[in-house]
Length: 186
Picture (cartoon, rainbow, N blue to C red):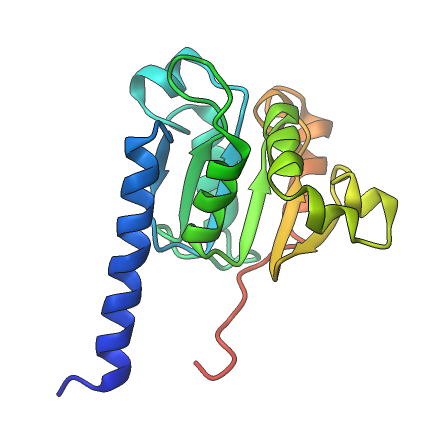
């Protein structure tokens, strides 16, 4: 028997899907589960990202392996990814990017690279300016920062780090700070 909570959940999920669809029509490049709990932001787009889909390369495989690792605890379909640039290479408008991130309603945002970090900082400038710690406000690499209830982690060149053992290990340590959050009453 369907409960009121079930009906509200369907309405809420439909609303999120509708908001994301509007942003896709405005040029947002996205992939993954629009109802996931993790959002990956990428600004340094490769030809593979543009032609085959966002995070279809080594970085996507690395994220899938990391997030589903037992120490992280995420389900394989718990994530989505947004590009901070459009297919023509222009920056996605910061207010639209903000709308997209808020519409995604995620618990955690992982920022892959410097262009995505800058785009996030522009989109959430007021909230970051209000943070008491300067390193948090700047989104320093490896720092987990709370912004509007979301955990935000900047990985500083994630895709490039995969080619270097020590850098890759450092990114793994940073990722271990953001395991899946379990539902409090779940």
